[in-house]
Image (cartoon, rainbow, N blue to C red; front, top):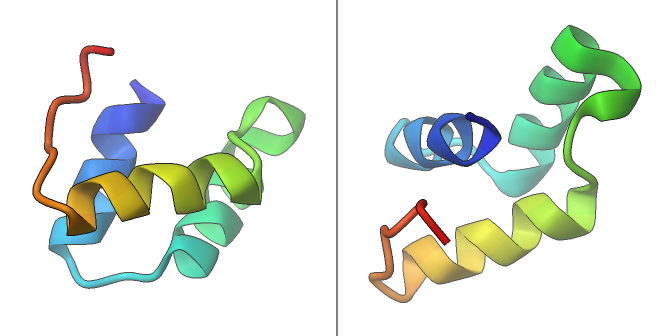
Amino acid sequence: HFRHALLLFFNQKKTADEDHRILTETYGDVAPSIKTCEYWFRRFESGDFNVDE
């Protein structure tokens, strides 16, 4: 469900850094890394909104 949260934050105009901070505060060590957040934000920015992959 992290990918869905990333998409939600992207649609709310948050940055990958903000998203990572929020997820880390909420989920601790199991939250996705900043690199993972940045990867998904790049995909969303390119128009790829498929989170099933």
